[in-house]
Length: 494
Image (cartoon, rainbow, N blue to C red; front, side, top):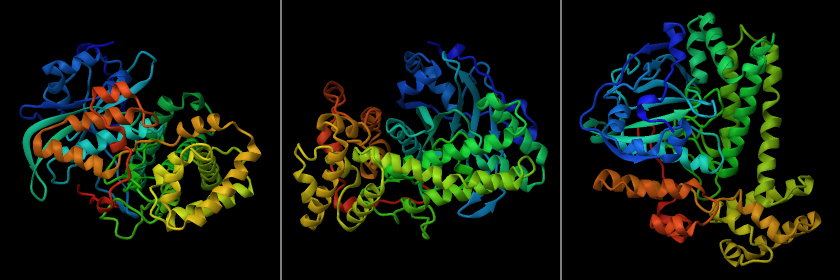
């Protein structure tokens, strides 16, 4: 394991043309302090967890000191926001320190979010609120626990300086870890400013670091586009099956490595509603649950336009034609896994269609329904039935479901174990997250952040010894969201 002094930073992005970034050090802060440290994030980069106990840890990752070998910069990009092109974006408050290579040879970007204004700040203070930092920190760990590709975090560092939004706010720096920070919007900036050389340079950079096997292929740019398309379809299928809504699927929030990127007003659905969005700013529901798949297609099409001088437009369209069938197959497979079914024929289609209509028509918790279904037909599943307004409808559906189970002839315990391995008992519910934020902001009590982080490391099973150590009541954290707290929303500015 490495210590802070020998992390062996490099920064390959700073070797690219200066138009792609601004070389910029983080702005120092007053009396930084540790809000929460993520040992799993430290493991990714091979850092000894004991290093988090040193004062130097918060000084380095708040931006007060530069780690040896780091070459900080702010990345340039633009993007389509809510369907309209915005040329004035870029890392206004984010600093990429560089890359750390772990013992397995994997490179990870280390990025400080909220590290002070850059030339892309557009007059803003370049800081991040503590509440927004907590939200992103826990979201990354929650999605990783669900096996959904995502950015991660090493820590949240609190700072004493107040920042001003609608009211004075506590601020923090999020130490983000990702395999890349190149966005669809990174390419769009240079496409729309008629600078195709920079588009090609950026594409070559990503291919070299993430797709070295195609680097010498004549059609490498088409292959690159196709691979990103596949990863994006897979990612959004995982979101949909888990009931996760990103909330702000702008092209500058889409990463070319197919990970969940830039968390704002996200949320998991409580009850199945395709129209749900956790973003109160999204009054038209552009980024609602039911539209995420088509927005993924739209975003890829905009990114594809920026590659038009590298890939023939007809080839782009041929690749785009693969998006919907790829997404459909992935999503269908995932729902099959959630139901414990492997034969995905027309009867399966009819069964799932009627199920989602039932879930839409009844006040049923989406996550807890699938978790309880693994008890059927030999366990205690009565609670599942009582959640439906019309008992006859759910019993009729269960009878059809049982026929599909029986034709596959899989042992009950085997199927239950498989279902419990994909249907979580615990998710990052909005009200639980808000409780952690309120304790941190109002009481300087960070224990609930730690508790949720530990809980969501493995959301599929009970861990009595761990739960006892961190004072986690599994029944409380697995309960349906109280009716008064259903459908919570936040604005983009939150």
